[in-house]
Length: 221
Ligand code: DC
Image 1 (cartoon, helix red, strand yellow):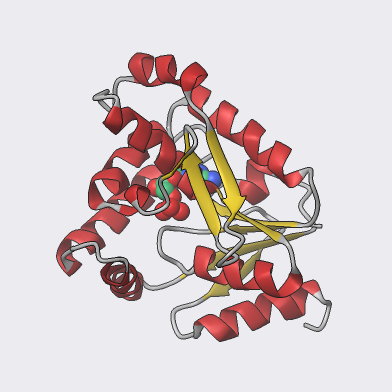
Image 2 (cartoon, protein in one colour):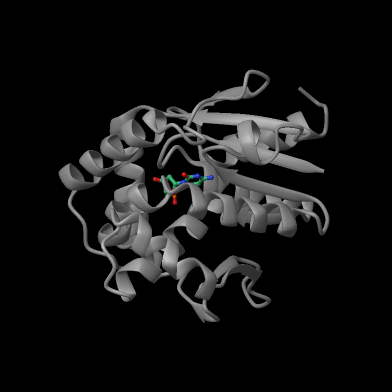
């Protein structure tokens, strides 16, 4: 079973996918975290995010893996064997990832890894192009949207909970900027698959979002 959840930044995809994955016992793959890990690699290597050639040169020596933390059940992101789940959430990486994820070679490598990971059983993946490019034949496709101000508030809260300092105006601007760039890129732009189910999470609680998706998967709605 393959469940795809796409949508703009901070629309509730990962929190919902994590809950659905754990309740249904599906592997949860956070594809945004994989692009963020590649941006972190560029940052640590002192490579300009916009320098396509230099970012591509890092690819052969880069390992990005998602594993389940046996203690918490959460998906952890490993970059070259190191747990970077926290480091990839900083405002610096949120800025850099937009350029890195536009590079064709980066997308080809990460999509290949996503398909490999998904080949191991039931999976739920969240991202921007899962239903359109990575798994156009997914069993279920959801496209989550929410009001920009609500998304900014949610993202700020998430960052604060992780101990990362941020400012609401900056967070809002970053989300808006990423949405525009993610939607307008030529390779795998952010857009709903024609057969996706639209979920507006603006006035839904996390529990309602998870329940909505689970009931669709179970054929209850
Ligand atoms: O979901 P997120 O905000 O952590 O994703 C980080 C960036 O990665 C986002 O700005 C767009 C990009 N991304 C992508 O291009 N394709 C995906 N499947 C997932 C994320």
